Image (cartoon, rainbow, N blue to C red):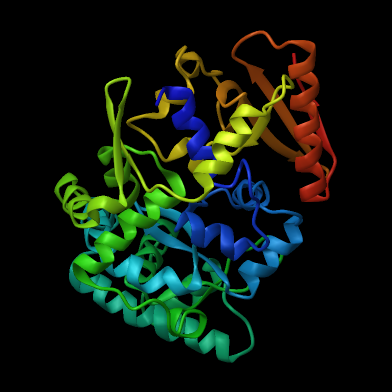
Length: 371
């Protein structure tokens, strides 16, 4: 196996090639978790993998609670399928909470205070939900102040993150563009029952099914696990996983029936360039801190615009070829592309066509600047 095949296998495993999926929850479940701090482009990450769906379909899955947005891994926002919320949090949150402890202390939240705010957040969200709405963060902050916890917005934010990692609250039904909170007992009352090493093995297996081939350090970073935990899970998986060395990286993946489709696609590939317009946190690019170079063998990604807010990714023929930035002005998505190498006429046309697809998904005009 060589680097290009590794990247191609990852794209297939993530349904950016080959078989697309029918529902946003299928995408999230297949990937186990999807990084989602920039929600508009995180929804596009799901849309890229669907047979036919628009932004409204993904929004509906979030509003209905089939897909939940919460702090889970590393720690940052992630999208998870409802049935996976509890066991994933039970496995990963202890280490995530330890990693977050300096931030909690910096804003004055010690363990005793956090135990108190967990109770207050649950009470506030339950009360406001009973009044007919899932509350926004400002509404939670105001209600917490009424209950005796007056703090700055950063401390309130950390208190709510702690309640998310404790499995107390998750995303509620959005109010326009505003994120809201709901009780986890309301949005995810059941789910997969996994604990201990069974949960660990299942997480590593699911990551490799949806992301592999991947290095041990990729898996450990993604799930906030130790290298020892990941290796223990690989040992337990035994013959269910395969190992290969590529460009000095030891990689693992779970073979599947789709491997035949992958070989067929490679044999019948056309000469037309294939473009992926992705968010920078997309699972096919952002999940591999150890082996991301396999998608950028020329090291083009080292060159970044000085102003790189909302810096996202363009792959051409499965290799990093450009950054892009997103801004919305008067309802128009402005996409500014920063090529990392010269584009052929066919590549430029393919890039523009992919931004057109993004516009159809978002149901918005996309104005592209492509030097």
